[in-house]
Length: 358
Image (cartoon, rainbow, N blue to C red):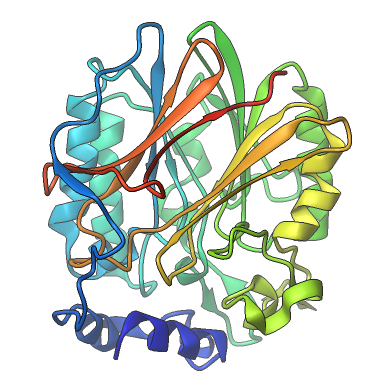
């Protein structure tokens, strides 16, 4: 069974009812040798990432680690160890985890995820994260629940200088959080929202962004941009875009389908502010890549990126996205795998964009 077939099962709700995952047997089948070249769309170069531009710093993106936690945990550990080792050389300011820590919400998979992420703690590298759909189970009433905040509790982060706060109606939950950091003489807000955020979560998010309107804002959520280089938009595209949050039958606290997809988040949050510079998400398979830039009503062009490497061999082949944030407002992106010792220099994996000013 290939990845697309398995993800189609998820879309139809077959695996969701059992905890948003098809489990380890499906995972094992997925890791069989692919029928086609898994890098036919790539341009792989045996090299280290490009040298850092003077005055720049790096944001590291860690997408969908679910298959690492399911079976290729060595890759996960290698990724976080490399990040710590490169902290000084690449001036790494923070790491963004895009959700799906695990494939099935089981104790062993969560333990593997915690072990890998703890390397960042030990190396004093700040990291910010969101839950993905695979990080959830269902309770007996059908509500989506996640042990995310058990394994990554608020108490662990509350006293860190980067910690801003969490959703005001769930003070002990890390499903929705915000973080503040400064680098390169610039001040940032990182807003981390749950998979298909609830409308009241978006209310809270608007308040957070308004309070910190002097900071460059980054949105991290699991589902936002799709591989067609458009935002998820259930009202417009329906099933033409696979795995939209609206198809999962999400129930939270007894309320059905109180979720927002990418277009709804854009309209109800991002377009209302003058401080967002980019959004980033994972979740989507196919080639796992997408990108667009859209103007807000005030004419600021916001970059939106999808990056998900789980479709590559061995759970993702250790790929990271490195975002070099330059003093002139340019963002240089390149995908690098410390396990392969390669950069992917295809136009989908290596590009430069000018970020909107704040």
